Length: 339
Image 1 (cartoon, rainbow, N blue to C red):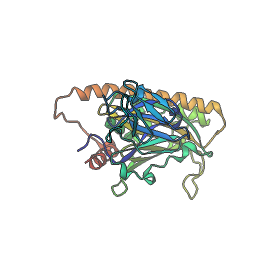
Image 2 (image 1 turned 90 degrees about the vertical axis):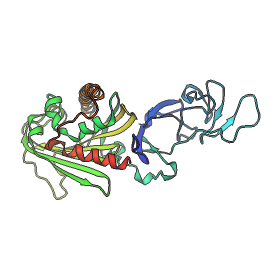
Image 3 (image 1 turned 90 degrees about the horizontal axis):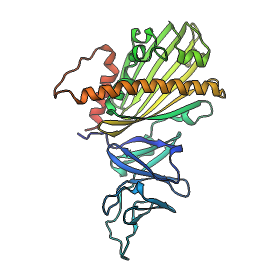
Image 4 (image 1 turned 180 degrees about the vertical axis):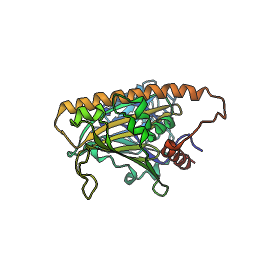
């Protein structure tokens, strides 16, 4: 079994990160260099020169080609070597792998695995990030812990009550039952927790103006191995719900692109999008500030947990309970698609 699920799209970068400079990033254990060609298209090549394995990201961009900073080998956008110093003939095998990319919804997605199988139709839908009907704040976190710990964390939101008290967590989150659904055919896991007449946490009180009591929904969608969305509805208690189930109140989507860096580190590309106060910069700043705090709390806790797990003897057992249903389903699906 591969350490990572192959033949899937992962978020490689925010679109705004990649320009006419060389960006080094390790994704699923593979060193990659990213840049844009002169026509604005993103390019991803293996970040190793074929000559002495020197990182191409430490070279320089010349027109649309990378000149290796060690011995001057030159590679074009396709990964083909076009120049070898000291000789006219370029060896036929002098090329580095190129990775298929799709730029969509403010993200640059990369296909890891068999490049001939890269299908843009399989890129997860995150259109809210770039939809004028929604406002978005975004950031990313380099996380020094394994991908599975972050998946576990996001698939069990009862931890909000304890780890994120005073920001987004209230006692009702952990106390309220939820439902889980596994769709093996589409490789999706969902769970829902609907709370009525509950406390309004600062995360929503400061941004919507709603006060306790509120009705609060958490409808989570996870598409393994790398895409997670919490579809949130908050509204003053008793606000009617229309026939489509989404009228009334305020709607927030907390979005995560979960990209393994190595077996023990992860890139977390996250955003908070909303359908209210679209032009209010104070709301944007409040959501950005508070969600950075939430992410940092998760990062601190999971960094400790990574050290604990890494130091455990082989065969150490853990106890799972009802709140772990979503996380266990996600684990099993990731194991299956990684075979």
